[in-house]
Length: 83
Image: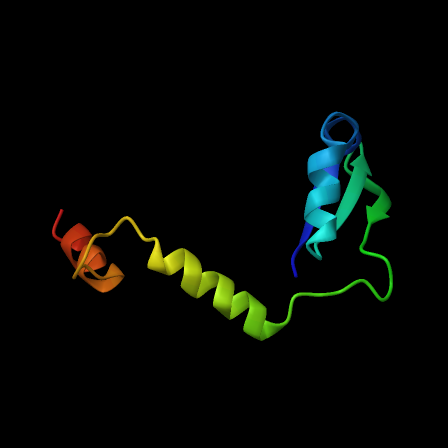
């Protein structure tokens, strides 16, 4: 998963949200004055999302797409290019 950087103050004020992200497998570097001082990482042996689970999640999100029936991303991109 991805790695993010956050400042110490942000980490202090948003710890619960950061822990949620770490629980999902993200690594977060905490900085002070732009310098890394700590990392929040999932514990070793923590269950990681498999590729299949990630794909299933994306397909589920895609099925709830607000595009409407019959519209595709490609059609919207092409329409956007006309402007």
